[in-house]
Length: 180
Image (cartoon, rainbow, N blue to C red; front, side):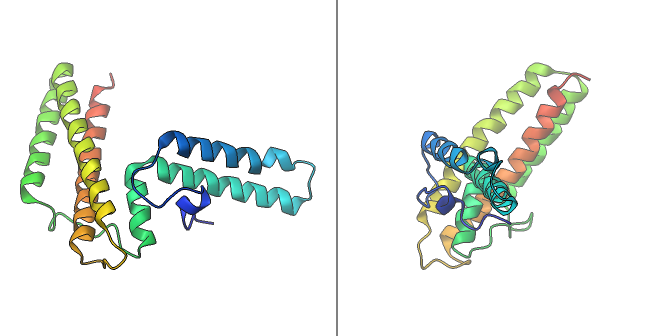
């Protein structure tokens, strides 16, 4: 059963910025309460319910730990589609930058230039952090009256698309850094 509202399930406010310690504490607290091992001697129906609840808690925790999935959940809870962006709606300057970074990464990987790969990876990680912060700001600007075509929703979707590109490029760099 998919998690409908990970914030409600873990008893946390619906907002992008979450206290990670509080998130972890709430997950641990609820996990201890609902862990299937506590229901070993209970009727099968209760054991199965505990397993389902534990799976939902774990899924909610994973969603809220990842800022991108957290933003997607917030958009979904507002009835706003998260993944509409395509190459046609992305900033052409950003797309060119990604192409150049991927070319540089391919060259550095072919030359086994670890220092260059590490430098590119650092650049990507800085850009990722910036985009995630911008995503949070866009999601936080969403009001109850904002629809899918609102400026804040469009900005959030654009940041999600750019984060997907950045993560893809980061993964390529990380794979290139693994010795063959």
